[in-house]
Length: 471
Image 1 (cartoon, rainbow, N blue to C red):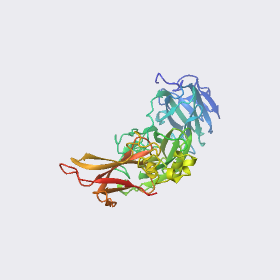
Image 2 (cartoon, rainbow, N blue to C red; image 1 turned 90 degrees about the vertical axis):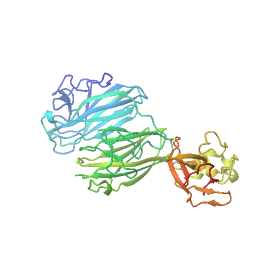
Image 3 (cartoon, one colour; image 1 turned 60 degrees about the vertical axis):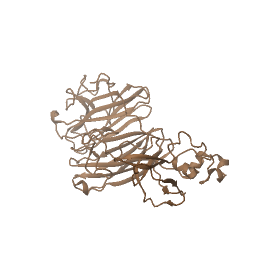
Image 4 (cartoon, one colour; image 1 turned 135 degrees about the vertical axis):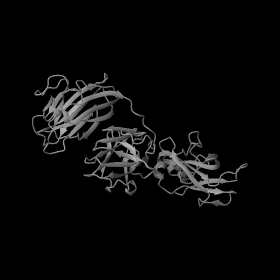
């Protein structure tokens, strides 16, 4: 065991052993049928057997250990099933609590249907948490009856300090899963993989690019967790969008759980992605899902997990994940920037008004997410439209770049082009979009257009651009 392990007797090798219900360094609670027994192990010869000697659930194995508030920790353990159940499947509840619940998961350990300890199959589980007090309590509880001749086994338990990826400014990192490594179970660039840690980026079906995340490829798995932390504004509404389907051939219904966690679980939804019973990725149509949540903290976590076994030849696939702030209405934006007297004066707070005389009307200040009362500040300079000559594929082009609010779903801004500042082309025929990428502030994205015709050698063509926006 790691020398930093905060859990004592995590391998259950210390006496006393079965038939005693006392386990050194652990508290046995609830129904109380928990022994250190030789019914299979992932380290040494002993593991903790929950529900041993009868048909019971609610048996609790618990231990409290010291933590440092704000420090991240990694919980790891192995679980399996000894014996032959008559109902089920048997499950295991895993909780870590400090001042609040830090881990709250229910897993379904693998079931080998055997009384031979050497054939009991253990699965490895991983969960990260950030301590919120000077101590934390780890608790395992078995869930499910029909276990008179079967026990849920827990072994090789450890809690060690760890480092977590820092929260990101929206948009999410690698939300379309086109960044490698590919086909590497347990590794998804920009994301954390927990639970059974079998998620991987694969080419099993996609809605953007050619890759998506497959949960549990190559085996009969559930309880995979894919998560990412990002900064949020408490009280602000955010939308969650993603696409999902089931790739392959399954023997039971496959589900996908999406959770949004702040100081607590602020949103949870279970969906049943469409199933096509095929290994032909081109024949799989991912379904789009859209939800809205209200943030309660400055950092939030989005978490996806697969639910459902009998999927040795099937995977839930996930693609095109986006979390963006729900754009305010113009009235809400006005209330955030103007006082009561200003709100009553449309010459100051109206859509077409320009109270700071920077020649940017309030409607466009709203669209750019700039300050309507501060002029063109250093912070706002990159948000407003600007032109440049940039190289693409060996040619130079005139570009037109500006910021817009993430998730903008109102009237689109129109890029207009002119040769003489008199006649303006609003058709868009002379231009094409180059990119839409996050601006790095968590609120806006940077939109870049270019003229379709490259700049000829020598002087640049005489072109003017402007942006218009209707309320």
